[in-house]
Image (tube, rainbow, N blue to C red; front, side, top):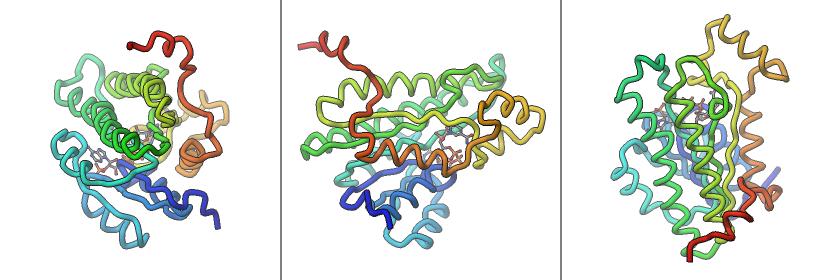
Length: 244
Ligand code: NDP
C-alpha cells in the first residue's frame, strides 16, 4: 500500500466529521502519524475505535486559550490541515454579531493561532513542513446568505498568501484548496434545496458537486513531496521589500 507519509506527523482540525475526518483517515492509511482535533468528543471516540493509531484532541477552536492549552503540548507536527469551519447562513441585513464573531473566531482566527503554534515548533526543530488551509469557492464568488462565510474564506485566501511568503524561507509550504459544494453535513444543510442545488450545479463546469475523496486527493497532493515547489504566492516582489 501507499506509505508515502511514513515518518510524518500530521495535525488535522475539524477531523470529527466530513472532509477533515476523511483526510485524517487517508493520511493514517498512507503511513502518517495522525492527530485528529475536533469539538465533539463522540466523533473522536468513534474515529479512534475505527482507526487504531489515530490520536485525538478535543477542543473548541473558537476558544483561543483552550486551543493554546491543548496545542502547546502537541509535540512535533510536520503537516497541518486547517479544515475546521462553520457556515452560519444569514441574509446580509440580518447578520448578527454572534454569527460574525463565531465565524471569524473559528474560520480565521483559529487558523492564525494553530498555524503559529505549529510553524514555530517546525522552525525550532529545523524541519520542512506543509500547511493546507481549507478555503472554498465561496472565497471568490458572492453567494446569497453567505456574507459572513464568504468573508472568512476570502480572508483565509489572503492569510494563506502571507503565510506562504513569510514561512517559505523556513521551508514551510502553505496552500489552500477551494472546493465547490460537497455533500457533507455542512453541504447538506446549505445545498439540499433542489432549486438552489441545480443552479449551483449549472455553474460547475464538470456538472456535479465534488465528492469528499476529490477534496481529500487535492489536500494529500499539497501535503506531499509531489508538490515540493508549490506554495501559494510568487514571493519575489514582496520579498525584496522584506523589513530588515
Ligand atoms: P462539516 O460541518 O461536515 O465538518 C466540520 C468539522 O469541523 C466537524 O467535525 C466540526 O465539529 C469541526 N469543527 C467545527 N467548528 C469547530 C470548532 N470550533 N472547533 C473544533 N472543531 C470544529 O464540514 P465539511 O467537512 O463540509 O467542511 C470542511 C471544510 O471544507 C470547512 O473548512 C468548510 O468551510 C470547507 N468547505 C466545505 C464545502 C462543502 O460544501 N461541504 C465546500 C467548500 C469548502 P462539530 O461538528 O463537533 O462542530
